[in-house]
Length: 185
Image (tube, rainbow, N blue to C red; front, side, top):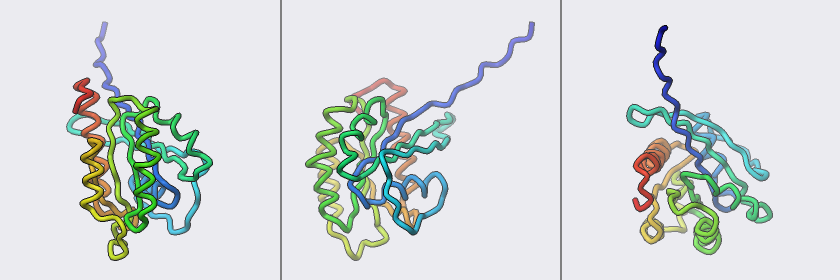
């Protein structure tokens, strides 16, 4: 009898992208998975998701990236997507103060209430290509990230600046946490 080698399975991750409307959540996902920027604005209805497999060290990691709607009428539904997630990206537009403030007043409390304690969080300031119109300073975003134990990145989905680094670092961090079983990282 021939013994066949054991197939290694990809590590499966559920990553959720949340934030206000028009912060560029869909373009973040689309740019990372398809390497394209969508010029026209299309509002996400409910949730859309895509899958991408990447290599972290020697391990293939399959990412289910859930892109949630930023519209207020879908917010109650979005909290259901937090269950079972390994990683949540909290996205704001660096040129729109209100999108940053909503993270503290709405999204972070919802995550605390509905997500597992072990979920990794990543704060993402999008639209870095428009930095000359900045309304949210990097220092205050870093302070929010430190307060809640989040990684922090400023990116541009339009130019792809820092995008791969953000996704790879956040997924790697969440993977290390998942593999080690350590929920206090």
